[in-house]
Length: 634
Ligand code: PRX
Image (cartoon, rainbow, N blue to C red):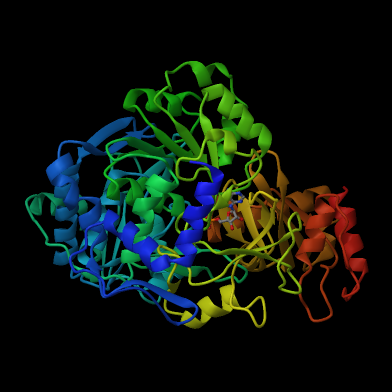
């Protein structure tokens, strides 16, 4: 396909969405046909396939039984527990049904919430699919998040049941799960009635046999032959909630629908990920993040592929482990984040060619800007086509992609994230005026609603917050803001340059500055704190913290400084998780703020990256910036 033909395909998705999405909707099974493709009567909320009834678990499992019953649905490889297990679609059907039977026994039904706090193990996926089978709404919380973070998510979702494990491992070190769940439940206002514990053979503190605890192994045996009919849901009913960070201290519950989600993800396998049913996909991302939800679990299964579920690091037991998996399981499509590739680039190059990776057609990378050297290096080392794609938790599937239906690899422009995917009406607009940016001019990437199928439908329990957060940046215009800076060239390629808000992206993990600052402010010796994300060669960005101590004398000595720095890092570990731990903590006398009290994080960030801090006329106390400047140049 030529670029012109692609443009036509994209244009049709916008000019004639009804026909376009009617065609796409045939990719899934409907129990009841929809009455209307799109209901956009209440902007900016879009409802897709109104009146249609379907079920995601039916589409991901049941409907494949006839043709693919003996094909592997999941291949689980753990280099943490040295296990490998495979599940055919038929076996997956049995596991999901027994988990659904367990949920039913525990009183879970349509619309109830289930919090899943698990490592990468097949039981996590059984639990997710069992929820959608019943019409229950799962909220998977990343296993690296600390108890306090988990508690916030419990209280927002008010789950009936939680699913966890006794322990996981990372890099060979045991990570307790159940004790954190206990701690989170203790501090939450809306604890679940039951906690299903999928215990594994890892030495760790055994779960306390509290009233809530239910042992998965025993329940699974009891429900070994249970079959639970799928619950047919109206297309707009929620399938899941996934919390993500933004500008405020409280994460937002991104709510996904059912019908739009199923259609968008299924067809994205063809249109964006250039894959075929029956092939194998390996998405190396944790199920606690959106990439894991969409491309380890839902999209490959709904499309009838085999999905590799990997628990472990990319460099352990050796840096060839991923390519070993590719060889052993004939992986055709792979997806991960640039940070993982940068980590591999530091290793002995021999590992890149030790295995036969000829089955691999495309390597998709997303989650953070993909730098040219990393892209070129991995493409040459593996002799594979590297495809950048850009999206967000909110969108659930790519907004921009360098692979579009049949486009030749020669059309890829290294350094650009690609073209708009079908269904996305993108506008680059000037941050201040809201007017469209010219070709080559920097602007904020926005989407003209109606948002396409699969995009978040609202913020869980808070429609107003959805509108206010995403649609209020450009007065007089209803545009969804991605909060990302971008540039479009004359050929329509977009380049993404990072967030315009205060979100930090460490190794593809999205963190909110306010959340980290609030955790630091809980430290008894911290008067005020600011965090910024600065360029980092390995992880894309690193978190730096600027702290005004309550007692300046304490940080006079080197020893005092390092002691306080350590205990500030510890509190972030404890309240959010190690991924948010600042790389360095600088002590300053004041933080730069405007006269109205708004923290000038962008100026701090600019100084930390040795750039011009920009317009400082609104600064309340100009000496505050000197203090930051002095600490940064130490
Ligand atoms: O800033 C963009 C960056 O990651 C943010 C979304 O992160 P998250 O919600 O975790 O979803 C990740 C889904 C892949 C975006 O707002 N980002 C994501 N992909 C790219 C990217 N930045 C540059 N290039 C990309 N390909």
